[in-house]
Image 1 (cartoon, rainbow, N blue to C red):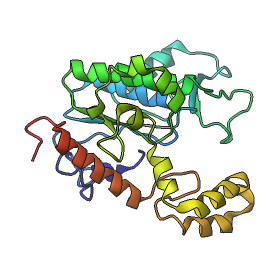
Image 2 (cartoon, helix red, strand yellow; image 1 turned 90 degrees about the vertical axis):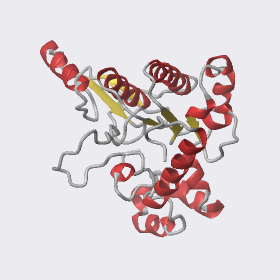
Image 3 (cartoon, rainbow, N blue to C red; image 1 turned 45 degrees about the horizontal axis):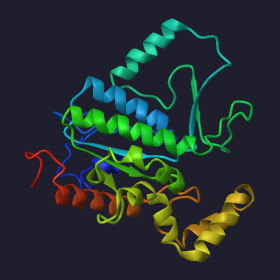
Image 4 (cartoon, one colour; image 1 turned 45 degrees about the vertical axis):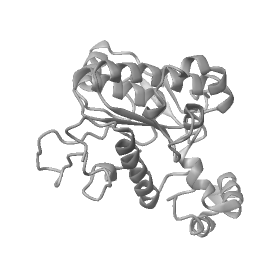
Length: 267
């Protein structure tokens, strides 16, 4: 969720989060948004793990991205180990860039060098995300940090079913979908992006698929298509503020219902 709205004064979650009223004004224990646009789940895992090892948090929300996104070594550079150390130390201090030194992150089909591109075919994309979830879930529990996972991208249902003996170690209360009565399997196979795309109806879905195939030739048409779905800001599936407010309200209610926050943060 690459948006600062979640930690703003307008967020339904403002009761839980301290926020920065002005970008240059310091407040004690401000909320920390580590999200960066275009991140792979490996990069989300990497940033979160390093942040958690070095800090204490009252609550952590992880929104997994599309599992096919990748992070691979940049074989086009001469590895500088001093820069590698400098970059690693910077990451440990919570200063993150889109890609760490000597790595390339990407989204398949979005202008990456085709010779460098790696497709995370299933089961790897979903397997990796499950393993990242298991690792972070256990780390959060060991440090007594309340937390919540959710999927913006779509995990493969058949792969999740095949890993049922893995996911039994995840508490369903720590995973979010639009229905609190969903099973863990249903929550882990739920995608918020897919949900808001489908709210646009069949005509929108059909027009969007055509536009995605011809997006460079149909700029004006894309604007018309988006008017059919107020929940997206582009045909790539990025959510609008309207959608994010719905998601934040859902997170808020889920936290209260399941008593996920530390007692001093509950209303």
